[in-house]
Image (cartoon, rainbow, N blue to C red; front, side, top):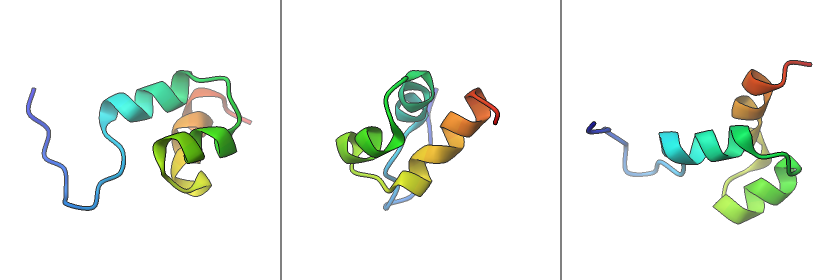
Length: 50
């Protein structure tokens, strides 16, 4: 499957899946993947509703 990402994309579908499956704090994931915490939150919220 070919994925079209823009030049400044920080996450891929595979990265977002890893973030969503992780049980680590968002801050740790953000540092690991070089993204902001706000970028890391949506996949986590979709997986674990509040």
